[in-house]
Length: 130
Image (cartoon, rainbow, N blue to C red; front, side):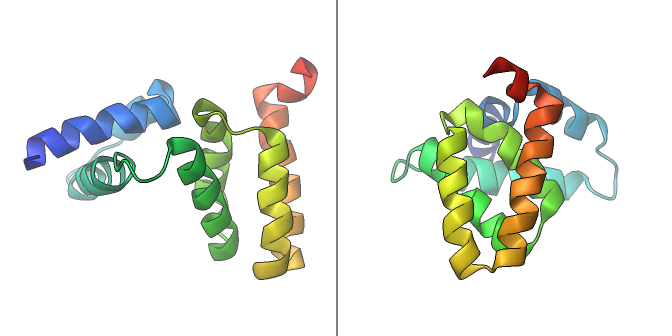
Protein backbone atom coordinates (compact mmCIF):
# COMPACT_ATOMS: atom_id res chain seq x y z
CA UNK A 1 0.00 0.00 0.00
CA UNK A 2 1.15 3.53 -0.61
CA UNK A 3 0.71 6.20 2.07
CA UNK A 4 -2.64 7.41 0.73
CA UNK A 5 -4.05 3.87 0.58
CA UNK A 6 -2.73 3.15 4.08
CA UNK A 7 -4.42 6.32 5.35
CA UNK A 8 -7.72 5.44 3.64
CA UNK A 9 -7.70 1.86 4.97
CA UNK A 10 -6.75 3.17 8.39
CA UNK A 11 -9.63 5.64 8.33
CA UNK A 12 -12.08 2.82 7.50
CA UNK A 13 -10.88 0.77 10.46
CA UNK A 14 -10.73 3.80 12.76
CA UNK A 15 -14.35 4.63 11.95
CA UNK A 16 -15.46 0.99 12.33
CA UNK A 17 -13.80 0.64 15.73
CA UNK A 18 -14.24 4.07 17.29
CA UNK A 19 -17.40 5.18 15.52
CA UNK A 20 -18.05 8.03 13.14
CA UNK A 21 -18.96 10.52 15.88
CA UNK A 22 -15.60 10.17 17.64
CA UNK A 23 -13.59 10.27 14.43
CA UNK A 24 -15.55 13.26 13.13
CA UNK A 25 -14.86 15.11 16.41
CA UNK A 26 -11.16 14.28 16.13
CA UNK A 27 -11.02 15.46 12.53
CA UNK A 28 -12.87 18.68 13.35
CA UNK A 29 -10.24 19.44 16.01
CA UNK A 30 -7.29 19.16 13.64
CA UNK A 31 -5.01 22.17 13.76
CA UNK A 32 -1.73 23.08 12.14
CA UNK A 33 -0.07 21.90 15.37
CA UNK A 34 -1.67 18.43 15.64
CA UNK A 35 -2.58 17.67 12.02
CA UNK A 36 0.49 15.61 11.17
CA UNK A 37 0.03 13.61 14.39
CA UNK A 38 -3.61 12.82 13.53
CA UNK A 39 -2.57 11.72 10.05
CA UNK A 40 0.20 9.55 11.52
CA UNK A 41 -2.23 7.87 13.95
CA UNK A 42 -4.61 7.04 11.12
CA UNK A 43 -1.88 5.82 8.80
CA UNK A 44 0.21 3.81 11.24
CA UNK A 45 -1.94 2.77 14.21
CA UNK A 46 -5.08 2.11 12.20
CA UNK A 47 -3.66 1.56 8.69
CA UNK A 48 -0.53 -0.44 9.53
CA UNK A 49 -1.46 -2.27 12.75
CA UNK A 50 -5.25 -2.62 13.06
CA UNK A 51 -5.48 -3.80 9.42
CA UNK A 52 -2.97 -6.64 9.88
CA UNK A 53 -4.50 -10.08 9.34
CA UNK A 54 -2.64 -11.80 12.23
CA UNK A 55 -5.17 -10.93 14.95
CA UNK A 56 -8.89 -10.20 14.78
CA UNK A 57 -10.11 -6.78 15.94
CA UNK A 58 -11.74 -8.45 18.94
CA UNK A 59 -8.33 -9.59 20.19
CA UNK A 60 -6.72 -6.25 19.34
CA UNK A 61 -9.35 -4.52 21.49
CA UNK A 62 -8.62 -6.75 24.46
CA UNK A 63 -4.86 -6.26 24.10
CA UNK A 64 -5.27 -2.50 23.79
CA UNK A 65 -7.42 -2.34 26.90
CA UNK A 66 -4.86 -4.35 28.88
CA UNK A 67 -1.98 -2.14 27.75
CA UNK A 68 -3.86 1.05 28.55
CA UNK A 69 -4.63 -0.28 32.04
CA UNK A 70 -0.92 -0.93 32.57
CA UNK A 71 0.04 2.49 31.27
CA UNK A 72 -2.63 4.28 33.33
CA UNK A 73 -3.98 6.12 30.28
CA UNK A 74 -7.57 6.62 31.38
CA UNK A 75 -8.80 8.86 28.56
CA UNK A 76 -7.61 6.40 25.90
CA UNK A 77 -8.89 3.52 28.04
CA UNK A 78 -12.38 5.08 28.15
CA UNK A 79 -12.29 5.42 24.38
CA UNK A 80 -11.35 1.77 23.88
CA UNK A 81 -13.83 0.52 26.50
CA UNK A 82 -16.57 2.27 24.52
CA UNK A 83 -15.24 0.96 21.21
CA UNK A 84 -14.75 -2.66 22.32
CA UNK A 85 -18.39 -3.56 21.70
CA UNK A 86 -17.92 -2.57 18.05
CA UNK A 87 -15.42 -5.42 17.86
CA UNK A 88 -17.65 -7.97 19.57
CA UNK A 89 -16.00 -7.74 22.99
CA UNK A 90 -18.35 -8.58 25.86
CA UNK A 91 -18.41 -7.12 29.35
CA UNK A 92 -17.45 -10.55 30.70
CA UNK A 93 -14.33 -10.55 28.52
CA UNK A 94 -13.41 -7.07 29.68
CA UNK A 95 -13.85 -8.23 33.26
CA UNK A 96 -11.41 -11.07 32.61
CA UNK A 97 -8.86 -8.65 31.13
CA UNK A 98 -9.19 -6.42 34.18
CA UNK A 99 -8.80 -9.41 36.51
CA UNK A 100 -5.65 -10.49 34.67
CA UNK A 101 -4.40 -6.91 34.77
CA UNK A 102 -4.80 -6.91 38.55
CA UNK A 103 -2.00 -9.47 38.74
CA UNK A 104 0.32 -7.98 36.14
CA UNK A 105 -0.46 -4.24 36.44
CA UNK A 106 -1.52 -4.03 40.08
CA UNK A 107 -4.66 -4.05 42.18
CA UNK A 108 -5.03 -0.24 42.16
CA UNK A 109 -4.97 -0.17 38.34
CA UNK A 110 -7.58 -2.92 38.12
CA UNK A 111 -9.76 -1.33 40.81
CA UNK A 112 -9.68 2.00 39.00
CA UNK A 113 -10.53 0.26 35.73
CA UNK A 114 -13.56 -1.53 37.18
CA UNK A 115 -14.89 1.86 38.31
CA UNK A 116 -14.00 3.48 34.98
CA UNK A 117 -15.67 0.72 32.96
CA UNK A 118 -18.85 0.95 35.03
CA UNK A 119 -18.97 4.72 34.53
CA UNK A 120 -18.47 4.31 30.76
CA UNK A 121 -21.26 1.73 30.59
CA UNK A 122 -23.52 3.98 32.67
CA UNK A 123 -22.84 6.83 30.20
CA UNK A 124 -23.70 4.54 27.31
CA UNK A 125 -26.84 3.25 29.03
CA UNK A 126 -25.58 -0.34 28.93
CA UNK A 127 -26.73 -1.02 32.47
CA UNK A 128 -30.36 -0.39 31.54
CA UNK A 129 -30.08 -2.66 28.47
CA UNK A 130 -29.25 -5.78 30.46
